[in-house]
Length: 348
Image 1 (cartoon, rainbow, N blue to C red):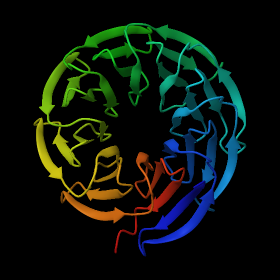
Image 2 (cartoon, rainbow, N blue to C red; image 1 turned 135 degrees about the horizontal axis):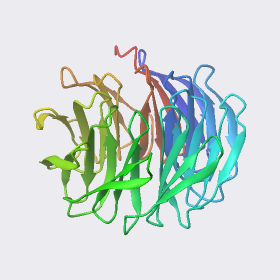
Image 3 (cartoon, rainbow, N blue to C red; image 1 turned 45 degrees about the horizontal axis):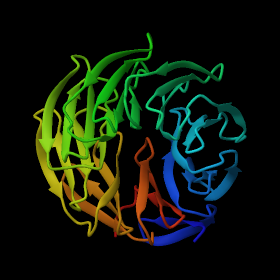
């Protein structure tokens, strides 16, 4: 299947079929205003999608291998992708969809990319064990950050763009000062690789999940572990205010965590297979999860209840993103499609 499906969550019907990727979709990102999405996949291309007209705006070619990661700046003007071909590609204006730069430096696959809120700085993590910091004004590498001893799985940047946090196969998290370009701390605690990291909007709290079966909460100011919350792995997302985290796991559930009291608020059941992706809205009231069974679930984090089960994908949901206004979600799947969901009209 080489199409994207668009669904109306009020009537639960398909609104459009958007043809595009020829192989599975690994990553998807959505602009804060919910009008644009960018997807990357096994076919080595990025697709830019207009979520108003439900059409493909551009097919961005350049990578010579799988696109593992993609992100969009807060102003919606810039997209950055990382690939197994060891490079980053930068698209500045998502209206003209013109590629502005080809950033080389990594000597192995790029697994993760993050962009600062002002769209001026990108941090990438790679199989070569390093992070690279890129200046999107001059399109040059500002620094090569060394410290990890194995693959960098995940990277996140604080809202003010001053701090980055990375998670690695070496079981550690590292905290980086993006002003001095120096490592501020090595956070140890996980006994297995740190798969996923997220950081609160104020940059004070980070959350990580690991192959050791734990979710750990970190005080980024004091560079110490605040809590070890057992029983969950694979993916984690954190609300912008840093008060709530939600994790998805191989046990088919999601867990909601109160980062103030460091306690589990709820265990959300409904999926029939492993949870592979999760996203949380900016206000922390809604979450969307994707799983190996091909479904997405929408969760009310106030009532701690399932709002809807969204069916359409025929294979694993590898990535999900929610727009800044919380009105739209986009999912990418192993079935080679993206699906666009309207989260405003959740009446069945």
